[in-house]
Length: 63
Image (cartoon, rainbow, N blue to C red; front, side, top):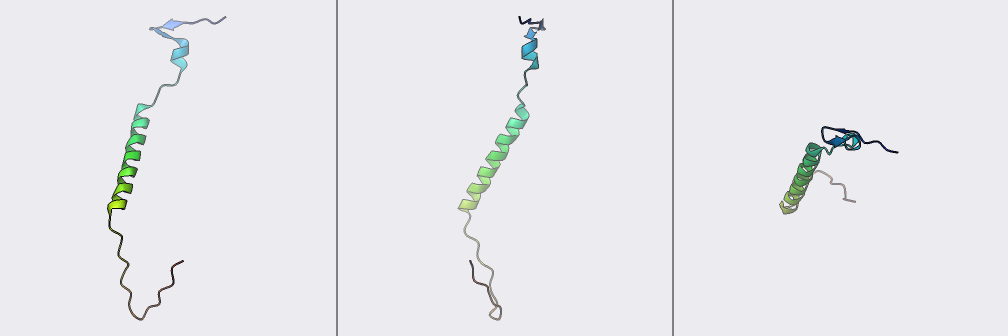
């Protein structure tokens, strides 16, 4: 047999449930939005120019 106690219009079972953390969820959405914005900016940016090489230096081959 379950006994429900109603206090201020809320049952004890409802009072024990975890409340959603809206600030955390909002911050996560903002961070994801910022990551997408940065990824988009990197796609739009022209490719970086390699640094000029002096004729006397040896450049290792790329792998």
